[in-house]
Image 1 (tube, helix red, strand yellow):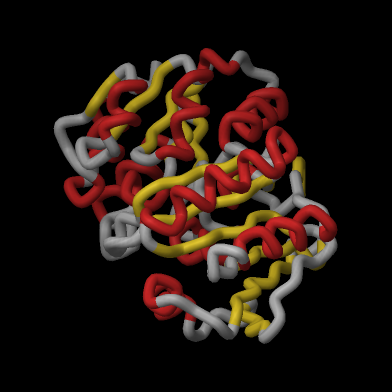
Image 2 (image 1 turned 120 degrees about the vertical axis):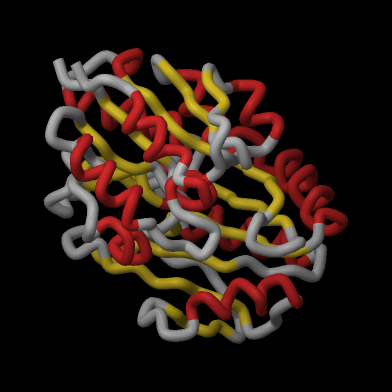
Amino acid sequence: MQPIYITDLDHTFLRSNQSVSNYSEKVWNEKAKHAILSVATARSYQKSQDFLSRLKLDAPMILLDGTMVVSPEKKLIEVKTVNRELGDAVIFEGAKFDIYPFIITLNDVKTLGESFLFPTFLNKYQHGVLENYRNDPRMEECKDIRAKEMNLKLVYFGSKKILEPLCIHLQKTFGDALEYKLSPEKYSDGWFLTILHPDGDKAHALTKVMEYLERDIKDVTVFGDSINDIGMFKLAGKSVAVSNALDEVKKMADIVLPHSNDEDGVAKYLESVSSI
């Protein structure tokens, strides 16, 4: 029976310059001849294709922190969204802290068409993030930002001083109606707070992928570095953290690699283990 490997992208499989090294590409595609490989990422389908077009994928992709599960043939297997009313309520509460979110929405289930909504009023952290999306056709500036019908995630970027009390306030306000993930942003000195459907995380999505493959969840090895990977680590048969992972992620891992994402840690691990 073929082993199954599912890896996070940013700061895990991707290098810090958001690229896939030639070495990692070669090891991945060679491994894919004898194993089932896929990804679990906070990135959208469109943003993931910049990297995944070079890699052989045999299992559904976990996208946007787990809100979407999509087959390699671009078939939507599962989607978990925050509805318009709840999304607008989150925006209203966030405005009390003088901050507005980015919102990733699903516009078309068949084509997986998305929009990236961003507010006109931006803080310095948000300005920095948008530099990576200058030519993204999904971008929509909103003077009065509001949720749409199917909101995949709402993301606040800012200082820990602002986002930590905001997270606590939202948890008290909405409770189990939402999922809240607060974590440092490794590409900058800021933090981000991601708001999701309560079942829209990587752990629930991993369960769906394994059901799709008709395999036991203990058959999968997962790789990660950040807070949104911990749920997968708890469920998978084996969890592997790269050396640059957050300390709380390393504590949950079965294996902590001696190599970082910039040292092709995941690829070196894949190359070292037998596929038999």
